[in-house]
Length: 277
View 1 (tube, rainbow, N blue to C red):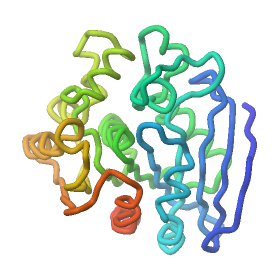
View 2 (cartoon, rainbow, N blue to C red; view 1 turned 180 degrees about the horizontal axis):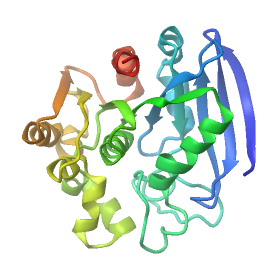
View 3 (cartoon, rainbow, N blue to C red; view 1 turned 90 degrees about the horizontal axis):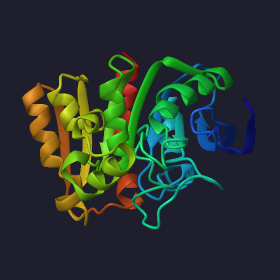
View 4 (cartoon, rainbow, N blue to C red; view 1 turned 135 degrees about the vertical axis):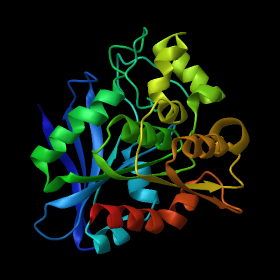
C-alpha cells in the first residue's frame, strides 16, 4: 500500500497532518486528515465524517476542533467523502457521485467499482490508522455532519461495541424517507428497499441495532430541516428502541460550519467522557 504524508503542521501542541494512500476498496487514491495531540499515546480516536460536497479539509480547517481535542487528548481523523479522480463515475448534481459517497458500498453500475465507502471507513482506513499512527483503537468515537451524520449513526449501529460514543450535527436521520436519500439509495443500491435498511439509522434501530446513547445538535434555521433531515424520525426511532437520544434544537443556527464550530467542544467532551470509561 502506498502511503504518503502530504503536509504536517504544529497545531495546539500537537500535529495536524494530511495524507494520501492507494485504497484497495475504492481502487483510487484516497485522502484523509489526522490531528495527533501531544504525548506519546496511544490516543483515543474520534472520527469525523463530512457531508455532501465536502473533503477531508472542511472539518479540519473550519470546525475549530483542534484546540479542544488537544486539551482532551483526542486524535481526530477526517476522511474524504468519496472516491475521486479520472475514471471514477460522477453525476452533474451535488448530491450524487464524487463528493457524495453516502458511506455505503454501491452495488449498481456505474458506481459499484469505486463507491465502497462503507468498507473503506469500517475496515480499510482503521487498519491503516492502527499501523501508521499512535491510535488507541480500543477507544473510538464517531461523529459527522449531514450526510456524514447519517454515516456516523449507521456505522456505529452496524458495529456494536466498536464505538464508545456517537454524535451528529444535523444528520440525515432517515435516508429512506427524504429526497437526498431516495435518490442516492436508488442509484447506488437499486430499487430493492430492503437493501436500503442497512443505511438508515431509523431502520437499523427498528431492526434491533443498538448503541448506548446518541448526541445530536440540529439548527432550527437549517434550510434542509423539514424536507431532508427530519430529526423527529430519529427521535421516534430511539424512543421505540429505548436508546437515549439527546437532541438539542439550536435556535437561529443553520447547516454551516459556523453551526458546527459553535458546538464542537460539547461533542468532543461528550466523546472524551465516554472514551475515558
